[in-house]
Structure formats: structure tokens, C-alpha cells
Image (cartoon, rainbow, N blue to C red):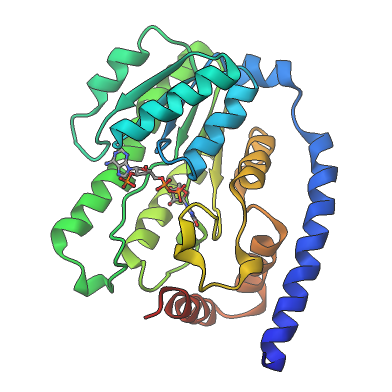
Length: 297
Ligand SMILES: NC(=O)c1ccc[n+]([C@@H]2O[C@H](COP(=O)([O-])OP(=O)(O)OC[C@H]3O[C@@H](n4cnc5c(N)ncnc54)[C@H](OP(=O)(O)O)[C@@H]3O)[C@@H](O)[C@H]2O)c1
């Protein structure tokens, strides 16, 4: 192992150890259960919740642990039904799985048909669509660019608009937009995704300001690399990867307290470095180089 990589691994290990200590401390600052349910219950919508390893299902598990009932939305029918059954059996909550293509311009009436009689206290926009081949921007076909905008930008806007207005009239609620660190600056080889994620970030931050005097909280989550995709992330330095549970825990604990959550100390340090210790150009080059390594380009 080269000297530079060794230092990086040592620094990563030290930060990870500090992180576990910090997590323990953080547990004491979470909103108490009754207050959380009153503000963000009795029902939550979580999109992109079908995959067992995914962040959406991680949110669903922790919300079910608070006895919040769930509307789970995803395009993967069989997996969604399996997740719903697991949550009902384990947490004794009501779960309504809704199989829906959130990229369709007319998806909303099918969702509101399920939610109209429910008091939705929390919306988590978490679904995403990208071309898994991670082509360069000009190598990806235009139809895929447009489909990504429909799913990741139009879909988020539609959900936020519909349920944000409902929450305002019912007088309470929370909206979490799951963006990405890739939305904080241009990220090569996931360029279209990076642009979609920037859209979500700007939408969420602006909405946070507009609703900050109301009882509806808005929070943008920008995860870094998270273990949701099997061995797809194996080529990145391991200390950069986070598990789903701490990402979700920190996010739910941050709702109502801040507008943006960058989960975990490694992501925070990397973002601090990108914002304050290098030029924006250098930050784009560094993340591009990381993508080249991690994606094997
Ligand atoms: N994992 C990471 O390292 C990471 C890092 C930063 C940000 N994030 C963000 O975190 C969120 C969750 O990611 P994840 O890694 O947990 O991924 P995931 O489990 O794959 O979640 C995304 C889900 O959305 C579904 N979906 C795709 N197109 C849809 C559509 N048109 N309508 C409804 N559902 C659709 C996907 O189905 P298909 O699989 O069939 O497409 C998948 O089940 C995403 O917003 C992602 O951008 C993840």
C-alpha cells in the first residue's frame, strides 16, 4: 500500500471511530417519540421503498418503529409487497403499498386515491432513476435524460406540491427530499443524476425558507456513498461508505432543526474540504477522479 493511501486509510479509520462515539452522543438529541408522532404522523409516504437494502426501506423501518403508518411507493411490485408484509409483521403498523411509475406525468390521482382519507404527516421523496451504465452526459441517449428529469425532478415537484399544500392546511408535517452529495457540485459520469440531485436540493432549500415560519418542516438529505447497492461500491475507499441505519437516524433526528443534513463525519469533512479548502474547479476534478476510480472508467 502506498504512503498516501495508508494515510488516507488511517485518517478514515480515525474518523470512523470518532463517528461511532458521536453517534452515541447524538442518540440523546433525538426528538422524543410522542412529539415526533404528533408532528409527523399518523401516516408517512416513502417513495422508492421496495429494495431491502435501500434507504427508502431504512426510513420505513425507523418510522414503523415510531408506530407511524406507511404508504410505500415504488415501481417494483413484488419487492414492495414483501416490504409491506415485513413491516406489518414486525412493527404492527398499517402499510399501503402503491405500485406506481413516478415518472409518468399523470401518476398523482392514483396516489391520492389511496391517501385522500389519510392524514399524511411526513413525505419522504427518496425514489430515483439513473442509467446504471453511468455513461458520460453526451453518450447517454436523450430519451433517458428526459426520463430521469421526469422521475427525479418532475416526480419530486409533484409530490412536494401536493402533500406540502395538504400539510399546510392540516397545520403540521415534514418533507424530506433525498438528494445527494452529487447534487452539491458537478459529478462526472453521473452528470445527469448530479443535475437532477441539484434540482432537488434547490427545491428543498427554497421550500425550507418559504415554510420556516409554519409548522411544516423541510429537510434536504445529501448522502454520500451508502451501502445500498450490493458490491457496486466496492472500488471506493471503504471508510467513505455509510450504512443505511445511521444515515436514516441522523436524518430523522435533524428534521425540524436544520435545512440540510450531510450525514456522518466523513461526508461532512469531505464537504468542508470541497467548500473551503479548494476551488470549486478543484472540487469538481476531485469528485470526477473519484468517480473514474469507483466506476472503473
Ligand atoms: N446509495 C447511495 O450511495 C446514495 C448516495 C447518494 C444519494 N442517494 C439517494 O438515496 C435515494 C435512495 O437510493 P438507494 O441507493 O437506496 O436506491 P434504491 O434502493 O435503488 O431506491 C430507489 C428506488 O426507486 C425506484 N424507482 C426508480 N424509478 C422509479 C419510478 N419511475 N417510479 C417509482 N419508483 C422508481 C427504484 O426502482 P428500480 O431499482 O427498479 O429503478 C428503487 O426501488 C436516491 O434518491 C438516491 O439518489 C443514494
